[in-house]
Image 1 (cartoon, one colour):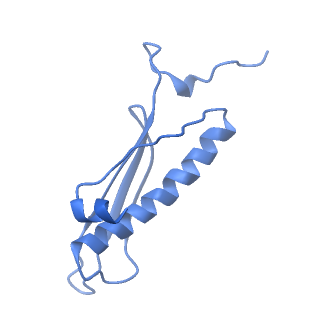
Image 2 (image 1 turned 90 degrees about the vertical axis):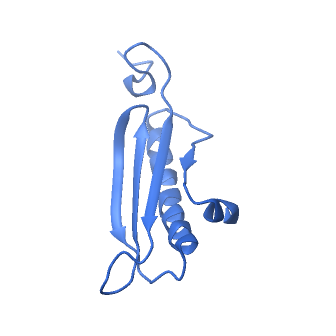
Length: 108
C-alpha cells in the first residue's frame, strides 16, 4: 500500500514540523590566514538534518562581510534541502533563517 502521510511532516504528538536554519561566522578567526569560519545547522522540527562548518575562501574585511558570506552558504543549503523535501512530497514555502548580525540582515 502507498503511504499517504510521511512521518517527517509531524512530530510524536501529531503537530506539523517546520524547517529552520541557524548560521554564524567568526570574523578573521584563523590567526594564520585571517580568514573567517562559517557554520550552519538545518533542522526539520527538532531533528538535525544537516550541518556545516568550513573556512571561508577569502579574508573578510568586516564582520558584516563574514556573516553575509555565511548567510549565502546557508541559503544554498536551504534551497538544496527544500528540493530534497519536495521529492518526498513535503512543500515548504517560508523557511526561516536566523542571523545575529543586523548589518548582514540589512544587506539581504
